[in-house]
Length: 200
Image (cartoon, rainbow, N blue to C red):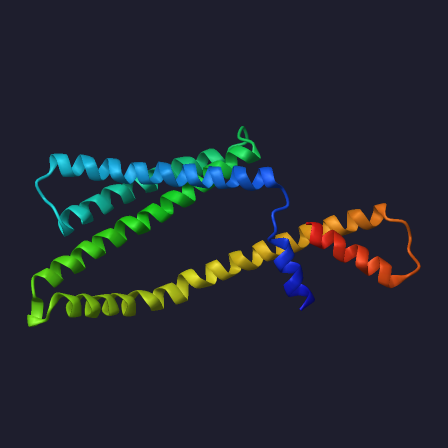
C-alpha cells in the first residue's frame, strides 16, 4: 500500500509551469497533425471526384506517407547534437502526434467502409445490425494484434514512467532529509517524510 500511495503522490504536478508547458506543447503538436490531415483531405476532395470509402482510403494513404516522412526527418533532428532537451521533447511530441494521426486516418477509412457496406444492405440485413456485425468482426481481427504487440509496449512504458517518478520522489525525499536535523524520535522523522511526499 505504501508503494501505491507513493505512486499516487508521484503523479501530482511537481512544477506548475512545467505542467502547463507540457500541455501546451502536446496541444500544439496535435493541432499541427490535424491541420495536416484536414489539408490533405481538403486537397483530395477538391481535386478528385471520388467520395466515401475510396476517398478516405486515399487520404489515409497520403497522410501515412507524409507523416512517415516527417517522422523520419524529425527523428533525425532530435538525434542531432545542436538541439537542446526542450527542442528534443517538442520534436518527440510532434512525432507522437503524427503517429496518432496515422491511426485516426485509417480508423476513418474503416468507418467509411463499414458505413458504405451497411447502406448497401449486404446479405439483406438492416444497416444497424450489419454495422454491429462488421464492428465485431473488425474487433476480433484487431484485438489479438493489439494484445500481442501494442499492450506489452504500453505496459513497459508505464512501468518505466513509474520508475522515473519513484526515483524523483526518492531523490526529493533524500535531499530534504539531508537538510533536516537528526531526530531521535523515529515517528517524528516519519511524519516529516510523509509531509515531504504530500508536498510533492
